[in-house]
Length: 454
Image (cartoon, rainbow, N blue to C red; front, side, top):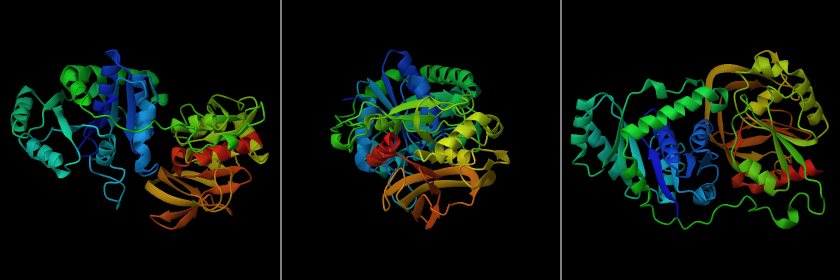
């Protein structure tokens, strides 16, 4: 039994991240052990959540992992905690395009049996806020909106008008927050700037969020609401699920394969469950920073390069020629290499004219077009992650293009929402724009770890 709240909003830009992160930090600083979660595929917000709580920020994605895994993944992350705070995505009822409530904050709240706190941008309204909240509270009887936090309130008079309007709605006001420039977090082409790129400033911003929430929110009322959540009735997800003991890497051998995982400021996108799965599959994961480290970790048998912002650091990544050569040499040896989005760009011949690792005969560049959305894909051929025909769901989020978009052996055949091939498979390399969540298919981690051991 974990007390829990879902922080939602009528629309993006209402202040969910500020409020959710501030609540996490405020409760953590009061002595509670707080488990942070984020609905959907977002990688950046969980970094701020982790900074606020001292625990890994974890995603709950009903599209990529399936609704049946949402509660187990939540229970895994929240095990032993006093309170869990779940930040929603987009508007409360916005889900995967054309698929109803799937992957929406509302669906996740129902799957978690958690009360919802609605964060409303009240900056351009007074009495109308009551109509808005009434509509959201009555839209789906399965969603329990237990409170409202009024954000961007202009003055004491404005707050009084808002509170008066809310009296007839039956949803308590649990906070009213003024505009506070000191809690603003800088953004760029894919959203907020990640914590890893601005850690001292991010620490200050999170502290300011906590102070703002403490001064403007009823923390006791919010905690009491969180404690009304009923027992979840879900067994915690186990990273060893799907990895049968007989098939685990290292069986009969004392040696565990070493899998290097790219990190640092350029490669900040990852799911906490991936290294847990690789460890359960018998591997040892070691993080390295392609901006600073000139060699791969000693004994590297395989390489995982996730998402991030290599386009921001193209010159610095290019300047680290020794590491680029080491990565290319590892790939030429046939060792398994899994590269997603930023990793794909790093393996290319060039990025915005800067030499990269040259593993792929392709060139990447920034573009003015945002590619964003969920995808359903099929493995075109056997590779280091999956056997041909394996189906999974993923997510694309980038403003870069790579030419060509697919190699002679593509990584994936995208079957929804459009039909196309994309990515590259060559020797042990699997490189693609598609972000995937391995908790949905644990055999991916097992196959990759076994390939590294060989």
